[in-house]
Image (cartoon, rainbow, N blue to C red; front, side, top):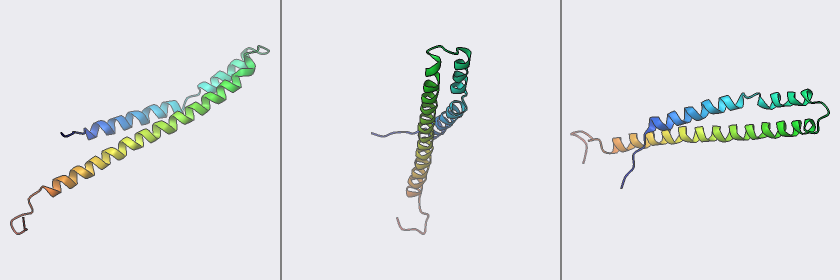
Length: 101
């Protein structure tokens, strides 16, 4: 039984995760939500807007941290597979005519 790893697919996935976290990290949605409170002064929902926006910001920060760790893990795995592949190639490459076998 064996396995095959597509190292470039790992790197591509890491980049996709970084791209997604860049978009999410830059979201202004919680701030946009805060604007609703000004549009509905006195409404009972207006007092909850800050709570929701603050929670949303915390969730976004948490998701971004997780996505960053995920991307770093994929990059690390790709690098380790490359290192292991190079070591395996070196181990099975003939040493040359003057080297013991």
